[in-house]
Structures are given as C-alpha cells and as structure tokens.
Amino acid sequence: MSGPDLPTADPYLPGHGDRSWRAERYTLDLDYDVAGNRLRGEAVVEGVTQDDTARLVLDLAHLQVSKVVLDGAAPRRYTVHGHRLVVTARTPLPAGTAFRLLVRYAGQPRPLVDPHHGDAGWEELEDGVIVAGQPHGAPTWFPCNDRPDDKAAYTISVTVPPGYTVVANGTRTGQRRRAGGITWTFDQPEPMATYLATVQVGRYEVREQDGPVPLAWVGPADVEEAGFARQPEMLELFEDRFGPYPFASYAAVVTDDDLEIPLEAQGLATFGRNFCRDDWDAERLVAHEMAHQWFGNAVTLARWQDIWLHEGFACYSEWLWSEASERDSADTWARHHHDRLADLDQDVLLSDPGPELMFDDRVYKRGALTLHALRLVVGDDAFFDLVRGWVADHRGGSVTTDDFRAHVGAAAGDEAVAVLAAWLDATELPDLPAAS
Ligand SMILES: [Zn+2]
Image (cartoon, rainbow, N blue to C red; front, top):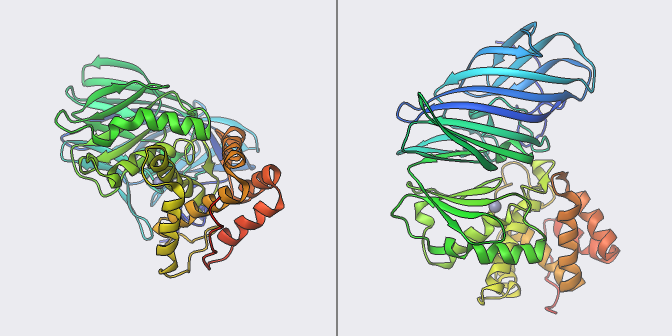
C-alpha cells in the first residue's frame, strides 16, 4: 500500500506533526460513554499556514472521521492514512493564511503504541479514564498538530454520565446538565503543547487547599492525602525559587487504580492511588510533577531531544524540596546521585540522548546534576536569579538547549557556559565542583 509522503515534525517522534501549519486554538467538544468506552468528538482547530500549502496533515489515531469542514465548506477531499488525517483545501493556502477546520469523529479510544515510548494516550481505568499524552498520546483523543513546539489555547468540554468528576486543563468555566449527562467545560488560555492536554474522569471528590493560587487534590473518597498535604508549601517554595506560578490553578488527581508513574499535564498532574504514601519516594514525585508547571509546561522544549530542560529541572526541584523541608540538602542528593551515575554506563548525551533514552533515569539525574554544578559555580543568588529569568523570558514559549546556554551566558558569563558544556555535550561524567 502506498500513501502520500507525510511529514514528521520531530525525529524523536516519527510520523507525528506537520511544520506547514500551526494551531492557535483547539475547541474540543467531547461526549464520552464511560461504561462502553465510546467517544464522540467535534474539534475546531483554528490555525495558520506556515508554508504555501494546500494540504493540512493532522494526527488522529484509532478514531473514525465522519465530517470535515474547512472555512465553512467541504474541503476538496480528506483521507486517512494510518494515524494521519490529510485534508486537501479547494484552493492553495499561502503561508500566513488563517483557517478554521472542523473535524467530527467517533470511536473507541485506546492508547497508541510507539516502539520507543510504549503506550500513551486515552486509557480506560476500572471506572474512569486517564489521558497520558507524553510524548505521543494526544492523537488518541483529538485531531491535532502533534509537535511539542506548537502551543495553542484550548477549550475542552466533556459530557459524561452523572456521578463522575471530570478534570481537564485550565479553569472550569461550566458544569451543566444535558440530556446525555453532565457537561464539564474548561478554558486554558495560556499556550499549551498537545502532549500536555488531558482529560481525567473518575468518581472523585475535589478537596481544595489553601495556597497562593487555587490548589486542589482530587481523588476517590477513601484515599489518604499523604504527601499531597504539602502541596501549598511546595508551591510557595517554587514560587520563591522559580517565580510566580504560571497558570490559574493546580490540581493533583489521584486515580482509583494504581499507576506505574505519575503523569504530567498543564495545570494538573495525575497519580495512582499507590502514590498516596507518607514516604519520601512518593512525596518527591508530588514536588517533581508540580515543578513541571514551570519547566515543561510554561517553558516547553521545542524538540524532544531537549527533554533534560524538563526532567533535569523537575528532578532538581525534588532536591530543593528536600532541602527546604529539612531533609537532606540538594548538595547531599547531588553527591549521592553523582556516585551512582559514576557506576553506570556513561553513554547518555544529555543534549541529544536519542528517543530510546529520552526518559532514561540518567537523563533526569544528570540534568539535575548539571543544574547543581551551575549553582555551585555561580552561587545561590545568581543561580536562582538566572532560573527566575529563564522562566520569565520564555514563559508560554518553546525553547532549546542552546537558548539555555545563551541565557546562562548572558546572566553568568562564558565560564558558566563552559561548565554546562561538559555536562551537556559529552557522555563522560564530569566531577562536581566543590561545595560552596
Ligand atoms: Zn518529570
């Protein structure tokens, strides 16, 4: 079978994303039958062409398209090739043309399997749903331009049967009863990458917490608050170190099922019931996921190869929380993990680990060590100024490792950039600078 030559936007995710256009807003209207795992959706994608093109390629997996409308009329044609929806306009769209594309679709959503990253996307739970988008799961529930640097605003409405709570990205703006159930509507005006879009459905209670922004933890009635009780303190710490919390609210969702790892999304994170424990290993992940709101969600990688800009900062934030909550210092954690990394294979290039190693724990730890080395070289005040400046300058945008080098160079000079290079551009493990 031969199909059209379809684009890949990022070599770490072959077969996803189209650089010939970008999205500005997604308006998603979903109807979900929880018991039957049946999703019906209507997506309106407002976008702009970036090249001269007559073809718009979207990512959509396992769901059947029944209608496509481009700027109020039927397009010349639309075709489906594997996980791509290819829409051909009636007339060429010069670069810079704004368009409005409506896609109606339905089916039984399920995770998408990728050879390097396993399953991601819309996933049924025992009695509910999680959406784990990172890195390739967004097409399992809405047609999108699935590349991490294409950030857009979202409005997400989900209709579910009574008795379920829905959590999605942004501020809840409506909850109204319809014939088929209850419609929950969320508005996410700050730019968001496709993989950070999410919907969580379950028989949950929402517990609000006092904090500098609306904070909550959400889950079944019988789960313990455990480490989530400390979210207000974590938020206060991270605002002090990284600058103002970048979104309107934050929620930790706890599913009734156990989950292997917590899931990051914009304005929320999802944990399995197995993370409601009082030990450090559970609590550090509560801090880790919250820190992703600054590093990953507000400031987002432009290419997956720069994943250390998310995971290095989030891992380092665990150590900062440890230090602030009167446990071991960040320096103690750094030396502990440096020793451990020294005993492992040194074959990870932090600035380009490759798709098979991008979520390797060594990327996380070496990324955090890179930041700690920088902190030791420039001193605490300069380091946290530099971090706050990084977030302030790039909030809402997309970044690369070279942007970070440039930022460090401007803030702290060439010597600091040279320190970074040893950690980023070679696989051998550098020594940590002496503690200050
Ligand atoms: Zn993470």
